[in-house]
Amino acid sequence: KINKMDIKYISDDEKKACDLLAKANQSHCFANLEKHSNEERAKFTEQVLRLESTYPGGIEAYYQNCLECLKKSQEGASPFEGFKPVVPVLNETVEFENKDKFEHTDSLEALGMEELKYTVFVLIAGGLGERLGYPGIKVQMPFELVSEECFLNYYIDYL
Image (cartoon, rainbow, N blue to C red; front, side, top):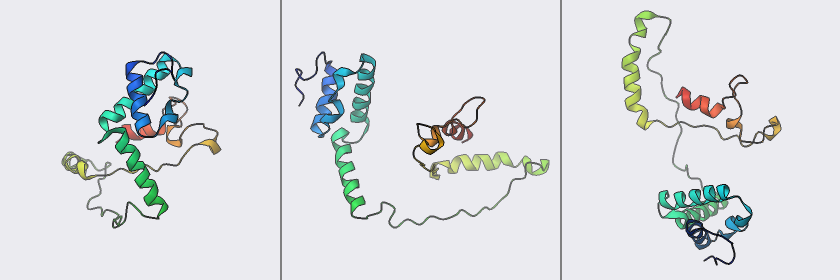
């Protein structure tokens, strides 16, 4: 538990967030909370309380799951054990230049939308763009210089 004397001017929501983190052995997350602006503190508090309310079992369960995943990783266990990736077989090629076949795309699109719930999209996590002179993650880099739209937004809009 956090003592209100440790952090001056703490709101009830901030106290709740700090108590949740302390219960999960994460007191270091709020060690310097008093040095942050009210806006930063509110954002931090909102994120903690959202995690608590949306993750099954809350922050404590999230923390325990992290510990279990790290332990399994150290032991060399793979969460993908038993899965085998396969390349899908293309049954039909749509030629947009051919107007006769183009009309058929509506039915293919409807079929695709139905199958979308069984689809997985994989976006490779390439880490930070430090070698490229970018301080953030690579998928957040501007995709092109005119609009400065990031690659991730471009990809999501494409989907």
